[in-house]
Length: 238
Image (cartoon, rainbow, N blue to C red; front, side, top):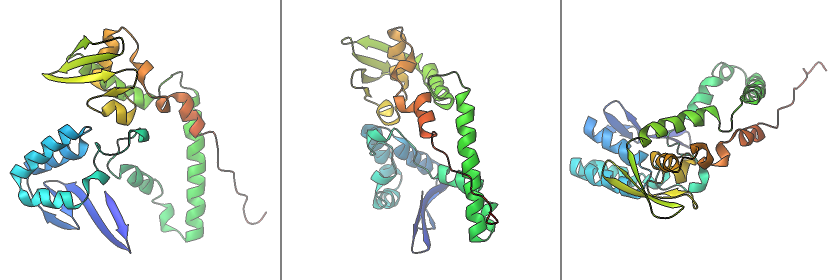
């Protein structure tokens, strides 16, 4: 995660065997790196607290530095479930940064014009490509769903009612509520994409797992987000 303030860059990120706090290498160790990422990637508070407890036993200095950075701003278990997004790194921004890398070397006016053309064509390309896809759920979402389906084979389902189920996965029990679209693990709640527990319930009910994917992941919503375009801009000669 990168923060910019008054031209100075503050960073919190893992690099090889250490995570950086305000630009200084501290708290080294593969074990510490692993538990750090486990805390950050936890979808529910229970898993987060478990990772924090383990981090405390590894290094009191590390946990102190970690908590000073306000984990609620960069861990998965704290954001609102309305976001339907579990991104906790700056990869999207870095990808766009690489996309415009050649334009950035030009004069400001030429740079902005190049970026406008790049984005204009990209929006059209994305819309055109998806238009020819005969799907309900977006292809990349489907890939994530397929992975969860594979993990669902290791789950055991126990019905409580028509919409509520208890699901066991490697001796861990969670509750799945199809009506309220929630699971104890919170992954489905946050991303809108079924976790292994929900996929197991869908299989138990002999229903298609796609039925439970949030509509924001559907093709029609994707197309709606790309329905507008950036107009072409004639040369200054005209």
